Length: 467
Image (tube, rainbow, N blue to C red):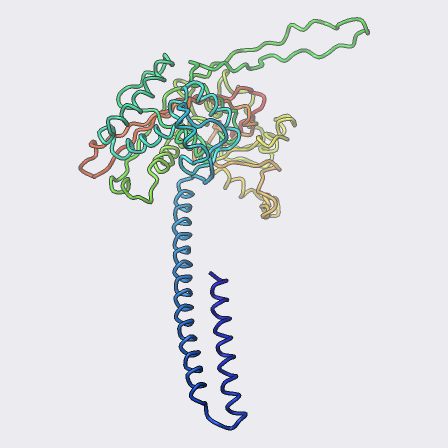
């Protein structure tokens, strides 16, 4: 369009130059315009006006296009902000086959189911998930049918859509003897499951550092834990093998994914709003609801039909010999107490990126207020290029860390969170109740997953305890 405008404006410039020549010639000869010159001048004026009309139209069209583009960018920005507010991200699907139906997968090759990003660490999980489900929940057909299911439940589906969803669920239940959900719960599509898992990693800090292992089929996961270390090597001769060791002992700890359920209510009108991606919205809200429960369990779970938390003393997790109270008072942490806790942990754990403190915000506030004998704060906060640390080790805040400061209670922990193992079932199941909250014009979404977790190496942890 810019080339066309330049061409028209060049023509206008040529016309203006020709008109100047006519007028300059008459001035030079000190006379008025002849009849032919009047006609020629008038024709040039009409041509100029015609070009001006054409230019004005092009400019108006260009402005209209520019305004449309600005509006489109504004809508895209609004949608992106909405996704980010829900804890989701933009991006494409990871490489690989995106469906068990070859025709469906080929027809949709290179397309996006919907925008979301998956970290490379999840690619092995996706491969295993597809293998164990025959890709039943990984096709576009299943995704499209499931979207309609979220909007209006089973009654909103066509006969073909209902068959797609139910047959996929039945196919996988036939493969997995321990999967007997029923009751209207349907397995979420792969893309939705992975969105929920990624959002959980953002919400639950433990998952960001823990060893998360998928167990879609196994009833439990054995976590080998070293109870007694191997004895020291002995000096020997060249042709001798050295002394035999009989001290090394391993204990098998079982991780069995336990059901966890939460539900949310969403207005039917919001479900119908075209700007809202109902799959992303429900995934984000369920991830949050499940995330806060899981974080509490990873920190305080009893280990009975739920994860074993790091703040629970247990021979199956972190032993009481990893508790450090020396230097603390009966009501507060001290600088000496924190230093004692730090150096109760071996350097090979302290030097890892996955080694972090965890306190409640009230605990962080208490540490932040520690002062020296001159009344100066001990904690010098970092600048933008030096994140805050406690004794040079990063820390995490959790609302579920202990916040009661009294005699003999735990108030914080330091450890290598990589040694916390999480057994994750990928079959996130969702039931839509379209009539339960009819008086408030809402749909209810009941989400169900299975997960377990526990610390697997006691010596990698130190719990901060009050005297």
